[in-house]
Image 1: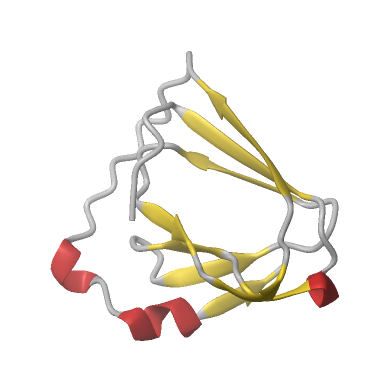
Image 2: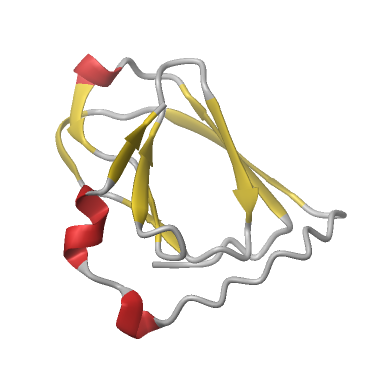
Length: 94
């Protein structure tokens, strides 16, 4: 789990979902894992605690961009005690 140390993080998915198993970006504050389709972009405040979920098979390719100069005003108030590995299974397919 980590913070990005920037104001905004963007991820552009380059892989089709059938090219890998597992993966996604888990957000502790949401208690969900976000899995993108090829061509989709996920933007989030760099101040949200998150992690890349382990890839079980194959390769997941992303372009990741870190941007500063924006103050989102969003503060991650989630607590470490709220983290449960089972929450990574709360997957949101977009």
